[in-house]
Amino acid sequence: MFGFLKDKVKNAISSISSKFDKEAEVVETKEEKKLLEVEEEKRVVKEESKKEEKTPEIKPVQQETKKKEKDVFVEKEKAAEPKDQEIKEEKKGFFAKVAEVVTTKKISDSQFDQLFWDLEVELLENNVAFEVIDKIKTDLKTKLVDMPLKRGQVEKIIEDSLRESISEILDFPTFDLLEKIQEKKPYVIVFIGVNGSGKTTSIAKVAHMLKKNKLSSVLVAADTFRAASIQQLEEQGTRVGVKVIKHDYGSDPAAVAFDGVKYAQQKGIDVVLIDTAGRQHSNTNLMDEMKKIIRICKPDLKIYIGEMIAGNDCIDQIKDFDSAVHIDGVILSKAEIDEKGGTAISVSYVTKKPIYFLGVGQELDDLRAFDKEELLKKIFS
Image (tube, rainbow, N blue to C red):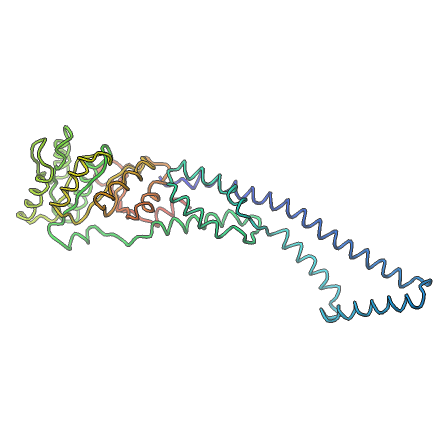
């Protein structure tokens, strides 16, 4: 889980660095050759100048002219640097120039696009959304394009930039559900999502977590459409040891949810957990029904439950649900079987909603609070 930068993407980063170093080496060779040619020309000129000084056939006028030119040259040299360090500084200047050319190179816009392509492909294959890739590319571009870079430095720059971009994407205020619940009684939570996303199991895990922390809850079977949905929630209620409020199949889901809230108020129960029918974001009738539940129950928290393994499909679904009912946060299920990890980053960036929990198994205790630092550590360690 979350190891996608350890293998394929990390290999892509190494590939980019290698390409850069090879290009830099070609440039270095050319520049070194130019500098050496310039130095050779200077040496030849000096040798010829010495020969001319020793030649006796030079006429007095010519000799005087040469002497004046030489004197002017010497005066300029004296003004530029101390006489006793002339040879030392000349050598130092030459090697400093060579060192600068040998160790640095600038990447142009077009070169950057070519180098970034390998990384872009790997990010896409690891369920990172286009919007996130654009952000990563923009952030990285400011650190690489037209900047003097040393060979062997590019890989670290890319990794540092990726870490910084991902950290910024996941930078949400700390969310403590147990603390939020203390604000109101009963505290009402509605769970929404598509079919098969692990919604019912996730609700049971939340109820179990509340029970372990001495908080009472009631489950509400507001999914009156899908066959066996009520029985499944009842099984989870029995498993956790909490009551389930239900009506018959075909009943108005909003009415069931309303009864669940009323029951909690009468019995002094801390939290109401409302299960809704899984629905596709394109099903207008069911989306309207969900809006009705929200309008009547006035939940304190609306949590979307999606699968980590759904990739970009999960992103599209969340955007549509958020547009319809304005979700507050996300639980990502089946994180234990996701080997890519891009979904978590993409969900946070595209929806601007925090991830509250990760489902990491089928047991009741397999619900972990989302931790940004833990994710970064697993990605980049």
